[in-house]
Every structure is written in C-alpha cells, then in structure tokens.
Image (cartoon, rainbow, N blue to C red; front, side, top):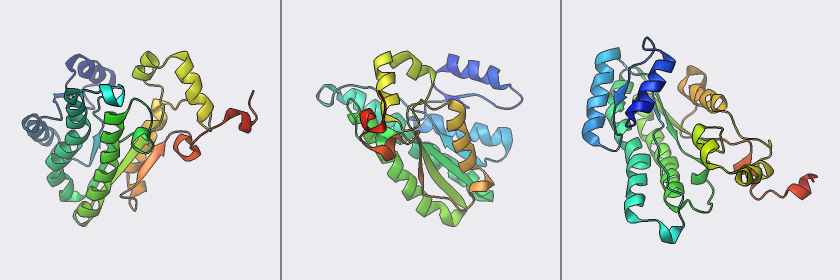
Length: 223
C-alpha cells in the first residue's frame, strides 16, 4: 500500500491488518520515491503479481481559472505516477506474468464542466493503458483500466451537494451511485486469471452513465 498521506495510509493499514499488507510512504510522482517503494515491495514479498495504479488528485476549476501549478500537480500524480509506477514494477511482473490495472475516470471518456485538467489526465491514462497493453503483452503482462463513474467514496460524500447527487442519479441509467465494493470487484477481476485473455480495455464502472450520453428523466418516464 502506497500513499503520500501518511495518516490515511496508517489508518488503512490498520484496517486491513499488518499481516496482509505493508505500507510504504511514497509520492508516485517522484521517481526516486517510486524506485525505493518498488525495492521495498520486492524485498518484502519477492514477487509482484499485480499493480493497481490508484493514486489521484483533482482540482475542479473552470478551464480559464485552472492554474498551471494545479495542472502540473494533477498531471504529475495522475499520469506521471502511472508511468513511473508501471516502469518500476514491470521487471517483477515480467518474471511470471501479471497484470496492471490503471484507475481512470468517466471524466476521461466524456467531457464535463470543471474538469479540463483532471479529465485530460484521465483521458491520457486511458490511452497509456492501451500503449502499455500492446507493448507489454509479449512479456506476459496484461494492462487494463477501470473508469469509475460516481461512487460512494468519502470524497464524494464530502463534496457532492444534494443537488449534484440528484443530477447524477437522474442521468445514471441504474439510478444510483456505485459502491466502493463494486469498483473493487471490477479491479479484482481484471487482476485475476479469470481475465487472462483481456488486455488493452477501459472498463467503465458507472451504472451506464457513459453509455447513456445525455439523459432526460422525463423521457424515461420519471416525474
């Protein structure tokens, strides 16, 4: 488990149990920290079978108000972090084959307001996933991405107002937010041998949000 937020990392480590995981303080946008983290993981386990590139940051500002500093922070974590972590772990994955799952976003598949930096970073992750899949297949490494839609995370509960939540529910065919466990199940599947012939894919876990395009509740028979 890697995170630059040491308190959050420590709490998650306790929740999971120290017998099941090690925690490593690491900023995935820092090449030196990534190299040390990869070495620590190898020393602890001897092998790595799957890498989930889940680190991400966001700044939901209008396009003309997004600072370059914010743009660079988002790109360095959301995109550079995927690049650096993958490169550091590829040699270990190649020994016995394995999987990489990059966490994108529905914002990387469809444009929305206040997401010029975040959405662009996630769109780049989607294409990087395909590049990695094509190039790493000969080493026995599968690479896929999961693009979550609105999910009941602590962050969403904090920043999504009742009005925003209603808007999302009105435009999601399944009519609700996803659960963290549903997102985790998709990631687990893509890491597992059950997905042994799947690579280069971007799987939207979004209740049909991306597929529906513009949703008009009245046409769906809702009040």
